[in-house]
Length: 366
Ligand code: ARG
Image (cartoon, rainbow, N blue to C red; front, side, top):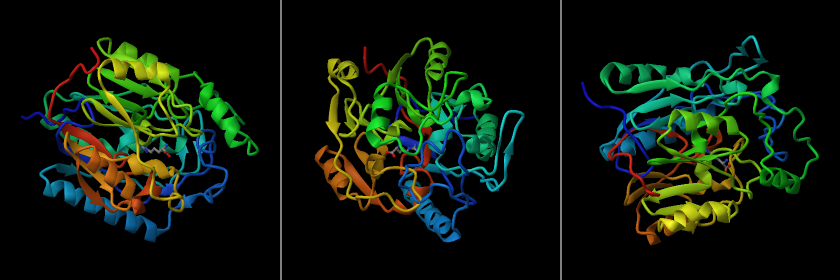
């Protein structure tokens, strides 16, 4: 019997990771949560169904390559078992025409120490996504006597969980920004809702983004679940679609974090970093003007890098500004092509989920 699951942050030496798969991915139909997140000018508005096979194959080729690069560096890689996502989800509380994908794993699974939590996700189309990871979690459970396998309270995702017509089509970008600044999001406080990728883990401190996919009640749940941790609600007013923290605020090593210059951490929340001699550096500008077709995310996937240890980071190969900045910040950079995977839910960090990193639970902000 061995220790399989252990990870307290995003930068200690990575030894074991899950890399997603794009098989059978669909664009989901609109629903109260997602319709609000597809930008008005996106060609995806109003479309749903299986994604074109050719795009799935291209994404899988890049995901397989990421897995190979990691394995060459001695990182053990596991892969999920995708379902036929093109099936409806029907519960006593709602019905939606199709599921989405098991990309990206970072949204679904939250590793904190020896525990992996299946998140309480707010998209109806992602309701069963954790099932793709069950064979792996079951294996870890059988082999690691200390592995804590948990699931956050399952949300019901009834109509009460969303503000209906929260955004109407005519609402401008400025109006969206006002709402972000006012912490007025599409989800209600009816039940606990969070995506794992809204939680930034830094040892004893969890920085949790309050936004479209994570609500206040989730913060309260984390406080009660981890009474010895400090739970910080963070909010980045410059982001019109605040979903997932990993294209906004990305730690590279103890003491250093890059912050999206369009989504700056507010002054009051910077204090805890500054007091503890952490440097918050503006991330380099993305090399691309537009995200690839059928992509939910913004060009800021440029900063969605996968840190392998305090000196090594994987960055998307066409993101020349980000590559250069990493070099200047003293990181050894491994460039890999990954833009074909972006449309399936995100970049290099999103597309993975930690199983094992060396290191223990540190207190970086005493
Ligand atoms: N909301 C981010 C952006 O568009 C993308 C975050 C993707 N992260 C993830 N874990 N899926 O800038």
